[in-house]
Image (cartoon, rainbow, N blue to C red):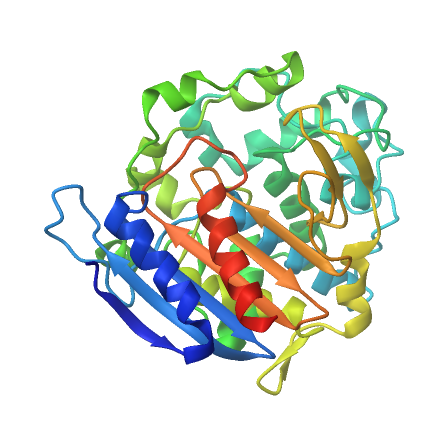
Length: 374
């Protein structure tokens, strides 16, 4: 029987049992799960191992690459800036980034890049994997190209471009990168161990990711836009072990943390802007998340999706409450916020599955937490 470490409120024993079952059954190799209720941690647990030989245990301070769960942090940074009056979510991107007006994009608004409706889900020009570390190249290519569909009409998941688009707007306004802004305005004040751009000492605590099974990867069938989006360049689990990837800022995909840090940050949303006496954003600033930007079949994911400002909202694919928002990452990590219940659930792991938006494991921990609150 797997040993579960950490602390939890006994009401949430079902979350602990769910993690133990997953570790015992091999669905998880190593993982952490956290639940924050009304700003207070009620579950902070971890277990399993960092290697398939099961010689290195998952530790309290283990962190891993959470892939697209990173987008929730980037979106929060933009929302904070909008809340301060420095960013207008309904203004043209070109107001802040004049070069972006090329290619007929002068009408694309900030809300379109936050909500995956800008038509820039990928690059038209070839981008080599290691060029993702070249901020100027990635952003200048996006500034020059034409949209792939009429902006604002449909969502098409901006798998990698989301971070560069939102990040460049943020940089033009503040002079800071997303990682720097996050550290100064969110993770620093909250004491949260989450990083976009891994600091030099972080590698010693970093867990390796175990790639999805090959047959799972082959089972994914993409649309033409999906193929262009997700294969230029193609991201695999192996890149997370590369030093250049870890130290770069790729604000849609290379955040590093654990469930505790992800939940601590995102609980700011569940608690309407303030946690433990520290206000990060106003209640009105949080409410902007629920301004619907699209609803329908996503051009990249091929699933019925409903996007707000930087987060997925309740939909056919994600049947949650009306005041819930969430997102997950390639391989399985996920974070879920319920503003009515004032609860945040986060799951971070190292055994990856092929899904781009999390999978049934994360959903299981969210359901177990909901059952505890029912």
